[in-house]
Length: 136
Image 1 (cartoon, helix red, strand yellow):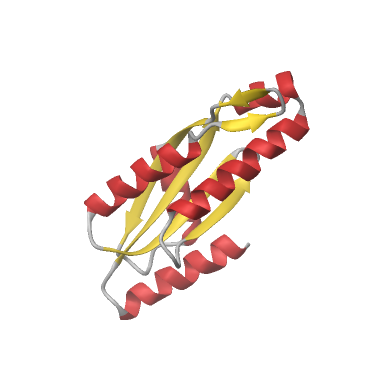
Image 2: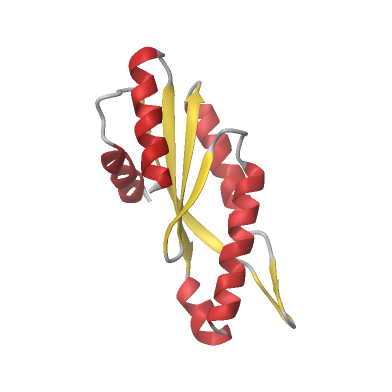
């Protein structure tokens, strides 16, 4: 709910200030295997570590949200061009893939990422997230 509210606010600000916002939709690849082979506690630990890593990577003021299951959404405001999106995507992919320690073993989460951008305040929050999910 907080993500949708922040996305609605970011879109509303586009009516007053010319800017671009970006939504990155991340899905952890083969996450079900972690839950099935190492248990739900290990899966929860991986999700927490990925969330910490993503939060440490984004710019101050950007929003990282767990969207459901093994999906995360990142809202980036005031973007200046596609280069920023490419850079953010690279950083998020690297951070999400950092090794996570699980008792006596390690997990190396990998993710798929989709990106959608908008400079149109009339676009809906759900539409932007859907487009990023489709891009993934």
